[in-house]
Image (tube, rainbow, N blue to C red; front, side, top):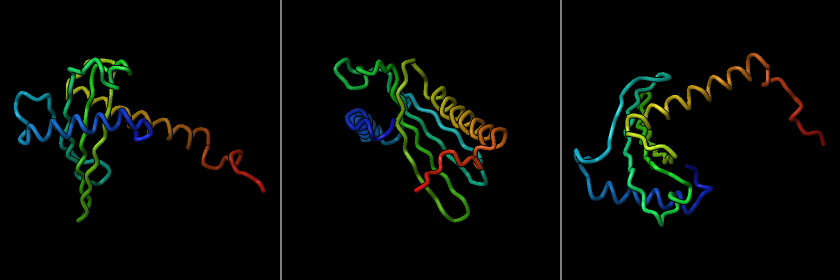
Length: 133
Protein backbone atom coordinates (compact mmCIF):
# COMPACT_ATOMS: atom_id res chain seq x y z
CA UNK A 1 0.00 0.00 0.00
CA UNK A 2 1.43 3.30 -1.02
CA UNK A 3 0.73 6.77 0.25
CA UNK A 4 -1.08 7.73 -2.96
CA UNK A 5 -4.18 5.97 -1.57
CA UNK A 6 -4.37 8.40 1.34
CA UNK A 7 -7.62 7.21 2.96
CA UNK A 8 -6.73 3.53 2.84
CA UNK A 9 -3.11 4.11 3.86
CA UNK A 10 -4.24 6.24 6.82
CA UNK A 11 -6.80 3.63 7.84
CA UNK A 12 -4.17 0.87 7.84
CA UNK A 13 -1.65 2.98 9.74
CA UNK A 14 -4.27 3.84 12.40
CA UNK A 15 -5.44 0.22 12.69
CA UNK A 16 -1.92 -1.04 13.35
CA UNK A 17 -1.01 1.85 15.66
CA UNK A 18 -4.05 0.90 17.75
CA UNK A 19 -3.09 -2.79 17.61
CA UNK A 20 0.44 -2.02 18.79
CA UNK A 21 -0.80 0.32 21.50
CA UNK A 22 -3.23 -2.32 22.80
CA UNK A 23 -0.63 -5.13 22.55
CA UNK A 24 2.83 -3.70 23.27
CA UNK A 25 4.31 -7.16 23.89
CA UNK A 26 2.93 -8.95 20.77
CA UNK A 27 0.44 -11.03 22.78
CA UNK A 28 0.08 -14.69 21.71
CA UNK A 29 -3.48 -13.94 20.54
CA UNK A 30 -2.11 -11.72 17.75
CA UNK A 31 -1.52 -13.02 14.25
CA UNK A 32 2.23 -12.38 14.25
CA UNK A 33 5.38 -13.83 12.69
CA UNK A 34 9.02 -12.87 12.37
CA UNK A 35 12.09 -13.88 10.38
CA UNK A 36 15.76 -13.11 10.75
CA UNK A 37 18.48 -13.46 8.19
CA UNK A 38 21.23 -11.90 6.17
CA UNK A 39 20.62 -10.36 2.76
CA UNK A 40 22.76 -8.14 0.53
CA UNK A 41 25.45 -7.87 3.20
CA UNK A 42 23.11 -6.67 5.94
CA UNK A 43 21.37 -8.29 8.87
CA UNK A 44 17.58 -8.20 8.56
CA UNK A 45 14.79 -8.77 11.07
CA UNK A 46 11.27 -8.86 9.60
CA UNK A 47 8.15 -8.72 11.74
CA UNK A 48 4.60 -9.07 10.46
CA UNK A 49 1.21 -8.41 12.03
CA UNK A 50 -2.02 -9.42 10.31
CA UNK A 51 -5.66 -8.41 10.81
CA UNK A 52 -8.23 -10.64 9.13
CA UNK A 53 -11.44 -9.32 10.71
CA UNK A 54 -11.99 -6.25 8.56
CA UNK A 55 -14.97 -3.99 9.30
CA UNK A 56 -17.58 -3.87 6.53
CA UNK A 57 -17.64 -0.06 6.52
CA UNK A 58 -13.86 0.30 6.15
CA UNK A 59 -11.95 1.52 3.10
CA UNK A 60 -10.14 -1.85 3.03
CA UNK A 61 -13.49 -3.67 2.67
CA UNK A 62 -14.19 -1.47 -0.35
CA UNK A 63 -11.02 -2.91 -1.90
CA UNK A 64 -12.37 -6.44 -1.20
CA UNK A 65 -9.50 -6.96 1.27
CA UNK A 66 -9.66 -10.03 3.46
CA UNK A 67 -6.27 -9.41 5.04
CA UNK A 68 -4.45 -6.25 6.02
CA UNK A 69 -0.86 -6.54 7.16
CA UNK A 70 2.02 -4.47 8.49
CA UNK A 71 5.57 -5.62 7.82
CA UNK A 72 8.42 -4.01 9.74
CA UNK A 73 11.92 -4.42 8.38
CA UNK A 74 14.84 -3.65 10.68
CA UNK A 75 18.14 -3.82 8.83
CA UNK A 76 21.70 -3.14 9.86
CA UNK A 77 24.76 -2.81 7.69
CA UNK A 78 28.04 -1.95 9.31
CA UNK A 79 27.15 0.54 12.05
CA UNK A 80 24.01 1.94 10.40
CA UNK A 81 20.52 0.72 11.23
CA UNK A 82 17.25 1.37 9.42
CA UNK A 83 13.60 0.61 10.16
CA UNK A 84 10.83 0.62 7.56
CA UNK A 85 7.15 -0.27 7.96
CA UNK A 86 5.08 -1.21 4.92
CA UNK A 87 1.35 -1.91 4.79
CA UNK A 88 -0.27 -4.54 2.56
CA UNK A 89 -3.77 -5.64 1.62
CA UNK A 90 -4.77 -8.97 0.13
CA UNK A 91 -7.97 -10.34 -1.34
CA UNK A 92 -7.04 -13.68 0.27
CA UNK A 93 -7.11 -14.51 3.95
CA UNK A 94 -3.44 -14.95 4.87
CA UNK A 95 -1.48 -15.76 8.00
CA UNK A 96 1.45 -13.60 9.09
CA UNK A 97 3.87 -16.28 7.86
CA UNK A 98 2.20 -16.30 4.44
CA UNK A 99 2.42 -12.50 4.20
CA UNK A 100 6.14 -12.56 5.03
CA UNK A 101 6.71 -15.24 2.39
CA UNK A 102 4.66 -13.36 -0.22
CA UNK A 103 6.54 -10.10 0.36
CA UNK A 104 9.89 -11.89 0.02
CA UNK A 105 8.77 -13.62 -3.20
CA UNK A 106 7.50 -10.33 -4.64
CA UNK A 107 10.96 -8.79 -4.45
CA UNK A 108 12.57 -11.96 -5.80
CA UNK A 109 10.31 -11.79 -8.88
CA UNK A 110 10.80 -8.03 -9.21
CA UNK A 111 14.57 -8.35 -9.08
CA UNK A 112 14.63 -11.25 -11.55
CA UNK A 113 12.44 -9.28 -13.96
CA UNK A 114 14.81 -6.33 -13.81
CA UNK A 115 17.78 -8.64 -14.38
CA UNK A 116 16.12 -9.95 -17.57
CA UNK A 117 15.35 -6.41 -18.75
CA UNK A 118 18.86 -5.20 -17.95
CA UNK A 119 20.87 -8.18 -19.20
CA UNK A 120 18.83 -10.01 -21.82
CA UNK A 121 17.24 -6.92 -23.38
CA UNK A 122 20.13 -4.56 -22.56
CA UNK A 123 17.55 -2.05 -21.34
CA UNK A 124 20.08 0.08 -19.49
CA UNK A 125 21.68 1.15 -22.77
CA UNK A 126 18.36 1.75 -24.54
CA UNK A 127 18.01 5.44 -25.35
CA UNK A 128 14.47 5.35 -26.76
CA UNK A 129 13.27 6.88 -23.49
CA UNK A 130 15.71 9.80 -23.76
CA UNK A 131 14.17 13.13 -24.57
CA UNK A 132 15.82 15.43 -27.06
CA UNK A 133 15.36 19.16 -26.77
